[in-house]
Length: 356
Image 1 (cartoon, one colour):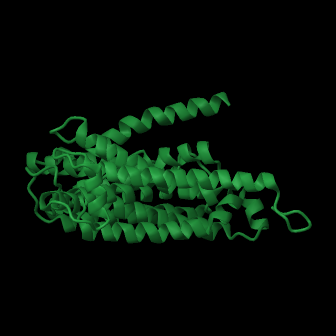
Image 2 (cartoon, one colour; image 1 turned 30 degrees about the horizontal axis):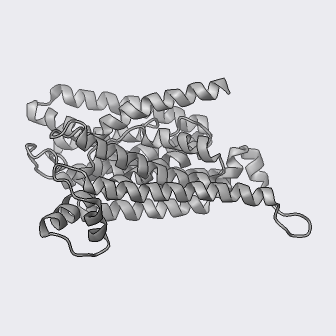
């Protein structure tokens, strides 16, 4: 926004500064949560030692092993996983122009769950490993990951394919995703009905979201995909702002709406599929975080996307830390906690929106 003489209004500068300040605040809270999450656990580690170790300083060998081999990979996985699910949900809600758009509501998570069940039952692929479930037998987690990932992409392919046949309207995409979610849920229940005790335990265990499953190498894959997709979404923030104003308005501004919608859906699905394939199903993050960020920072995607990325990471690392501590020494699956937290928050946001 500029005046005719090229100057920027003071009010607009304040508006931008306020939003940038909120993003910086979220980033600070995220870094603080990372340090606190690494320090908390069965073996407490002082915050100053955690900070010293993360900055390359010398600490005790025992604490160094706990930080770098156990807690830091899990904490970083929670941050990156939450950020990826949140940015995917934000992008889906924008390009579909539907507040219910998310990996979970479009059936992508259900497709991954079916893929994991199919791997366990038919291919004998076993389940993912977890530092918090040592009693579970592991056969071949790689097969389960690949199959879950493949079915997620297949679900996205069907949604995009149907949309191209009928026109890439938001309604068609959402309705197709809902139908696929019901189909894959029925398929998973069918496989569970014929599973023996060991197979059923494997299927149920995999469906629980668990950030402790990812090693440093798997965290690298998740991070690479999430960062790449986030850069693309941030680069298209103006296009998403235009689409929010309506397809015709966006076309009038030169936005190739169908192309932006298809590529955005594909990348959002790719991020979701990678995260779910490695970590299991973690619901509500991709649905709730964009709405929470939108309430605080507004609908301008130049700020909404960074806020959602940081907010998703913050929500999941706080939830993961609480899940490790709330029933200690037992560990609650983080997906259970996100659902318990996400559902009331989402209902509150709906009621608040209706009152407005």
